[in-house]
Each structure stands twice: as C-alpha cells, then as structure tokens.
Length: 145
Image (cartoon, rainbow, N blue to C red; front, side, top):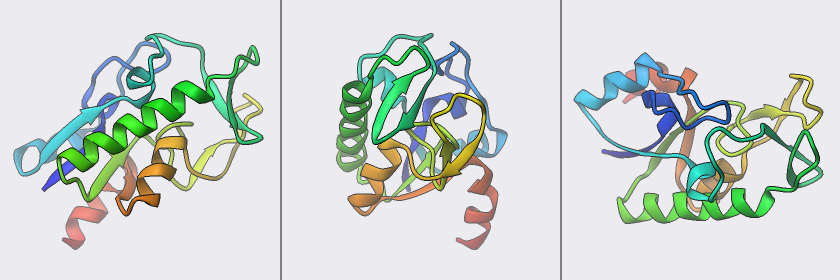
C-alpha cells in the first residue's frame, strides 16, 4: 500500500523548530509499505525552522499574528496532488499540527491548549476520500488490517 506520511515522523528535520519527530511505529512500516514522505508547510513555501502557527478563526496565524493561511493551503493542495499521483488511500499525519492534526489541534491561543478540529492538510485529504490517522493510531490501525 502507498501511504502518505508526514516527513517529520520519519525523522526528517522539517518541523517548525527545525527538528524531526521520528516515530518508531511509522518507521517500522518501511519494511512492508511504501511510504511517501512530505511536509505540507515546506511544500507550501515556508522555511525550516519557521514561526509556530495555529488555526484561529479559520486562518492560520503565527504568534506574531502573521497570516500564513495561503502557504498552508498551498501545501495541502500539493499533499493532495502527491497522494492522488501515488494512489494513496491512507495518510499518517503528525498529530495536533495546524497542517496535519486529525481530531485534535492547538486552539489558536499559543498556550498549549487543545481543541477538536483538523489541520488544513488533514481536512483536505479527508474531503477527497483519503483516510487520515495520527502517529499514535498506527499500531492499532495495522493490527486491524
């Protein structure tokens, strides 16, 4: 199966703070699945490192109130294109991210509080029929398969 994966979960240093977030459960899938790594923020033209951002009022803003919605939307469209090119039916995305978060994201206050919601990329992928799970769901998901 071809699976779209947040590149940071494979240890790629593309997160807002310039680090990766290697997830052993995702890395283990390399032995049995074809993983297509991507970072929607980078695909959208944002640098690494970059100012942290959160969704607030339907826009993606940095703590300094810079609006980066256009870059997040561009990166989401590129992720969808990549998923469609490779026939991905599943995406494993970084939890709580304003791009990749699924089910729970930061609330836009930059205080660490969480709220129900989906990141820009997760929302677009799901709207096009691609199943999205977070890294904490990987082991459970593949046990069911």
